[in-house]
Every structure is written in structure tokens, then in C-alpha cells.
Image (cartoon, rainbow, N blue to C red; front, top):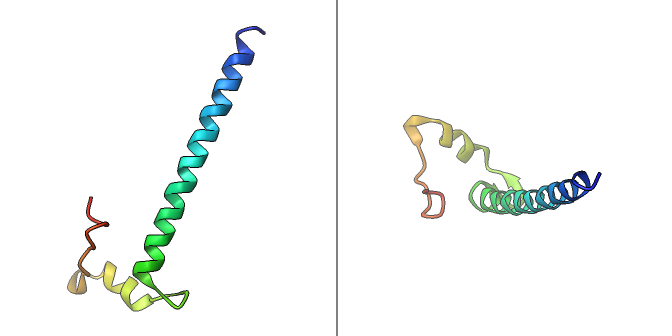
Length: 66
């Protein structure tokens, strides 16, 4: 019991840290998606289709290039 409790506490802290970072990345992704592919709160489907079409591939922003 003396070993299990500290390990459980450490696991919970790491899970909380991962969940916080995941939320940050999800928020950033959502903001970038909305800025790039939404107009007045709605998805610009023409732009989304163009993204998947090799004939009309959009140029990536500097932020999107990794």
C-alpha cells in the first residue's frame, strides 16, 4: 500500500498534465481551422474540397508548414 498510493498520485498528475496539453492543442487546432476554413461561423466547403483536390491544392500558411 505504501508504494501504490504515491504511484497513483503521480499517474493522476501526469494524466491531468496530458489532458491540459491535449485541450490546449485542440483549442489551437480549432482556432486555426476556423480562421482558415470558416466564414461567419460556417465551414467553407468549397475551400475544404479544394484542399483534398490535387488540381486545386491551396497554399499552406506559414503556421501550417511544419
